[in-house]
Length: 332
Image 1 (cartoon, rainbow, N blue to C red):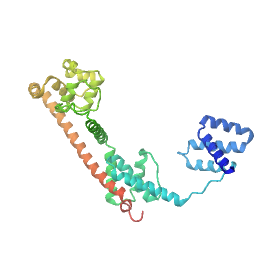
Image 2: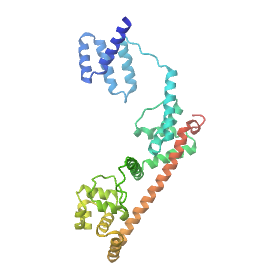
Image 3: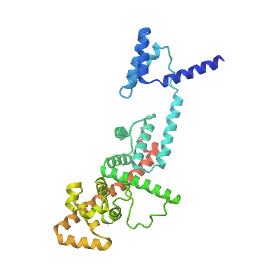
Image 4: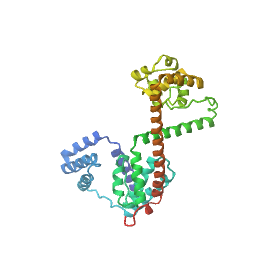
């Protein structure tokens, strides 16, 4: 009975402590000031140190030792065997995850954490923004080929165009998975006969339907469609818009504005032919549009090459993360 009562009392006390708000804890501390000044001082320092534990861990540990001393509490010593097992299990779980991961960004993060854990026999719990700082520590411990792969992956992941392409790829995969699920559930029977239409992921179904269907054929970007939707445009509004309206009023690039006007004025191949003839008459404007389109194509090809290189680096990082001992130099 005594044992049962003691256990119940301990459980209710821990529950009471866990449910106190910061304001309630501060109030309790103030009540202690009159009765136990030493306890009040120790716990107040600990309460303040908890808030800044991420910035100053040494201050937190000192405050913890003082608080346990004035409260006559004894801290249990760290069980090194359990700690080693915990670190080993976490590292093994990350190795399993990196093997199944396809996102280069996550592969990079997993690889860095696994390699650092193997090197230090410890484990870091850190936000992704601090990962580059950990790579600086790892560089002197990695084999040359692994070091090159990690440095190049880090450079590519800092490229805005690469990040945007990866995000777009993830969105397309999600949309593809949704469509697959819808078809499996019998909801994807309709809409298979849509010609050149495509799902741009912008929502607002029914708006700018004709232009969005022709977007892929004419090379109209997702950002351009998004700007038109933000302005409340629909298909019946488009024939009245000129290239100047699109550029000046909506901030659409000139090359894209020309493509939009071409798509609106043309219907299939016949419309495209008419636009081409008009552009021939315009002379310099046509050459400018082609030049801008060529530049856009070159940028897309460059980004695609970078993505391919990043995928290759990610494959090497995945191998390094799966076999961290082989990736590190022998003296690490």
